[in-house]
Length: 285
Image (cartoon, rainbow, N blue to C red):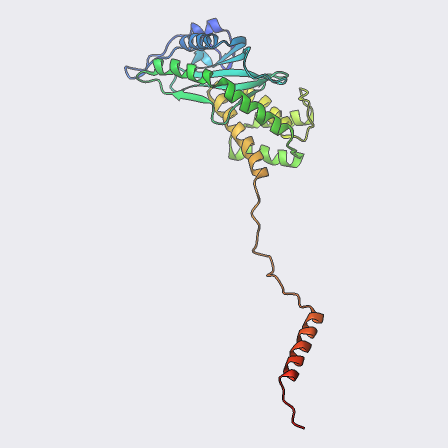
């Protein structure tokens, strides 16, 4: 069984996908090992998986797992929940990646912290042991990373972003950053005109724009999804940071200061000088 395009698949199908044979230097890290290691470490640290989803391309050469999480002592937010995600490949097209993020309740859009909150590892040498260790490490960072994402979300809700500015950012995401393709660009445009979800904010806010873009990013291939999510979050963080940074003053076209002469004061100074000269003068009678 194979899938011509990346799409959601079952865990059992993914675990049964045939393993690759790339030679002695290639260390096979099976999707089954990644799944079992992720769930084992999540449970060990007290997390409950409330939803798990998997996507893969043809013959599971590239696969992705996403877990929505709950924890009794984890930070809570009324609009977002914690998320753990990983990407693995059998065709050498991408290194193993895993990281902590968040998902929006109303639409299941994803957020991944700009530094990917993640670990990536080539399939060589001790990759199996290293990857299992990295899964545990990243899950241990969950609370801190999620707290930062909640703060980022609240900052974006308060940040005004006009339709003109949104259009400019879309162009940059398509042309400069290459995060969006033409199909996704159309999806964002459609969402701006008629949103599929109610995010509880005005249309002219960074949070609305963020969700319109991450909704379109659901179409991203598993090979690039985590990377594009991370880069987009960094991109938006930069937009907010630049907006609050002090702007340098352009002094090239500023005229030099002009001394303003007080004519009354000048006349008084001249008169006092005149009196001083009179007092110093000796008159002969």
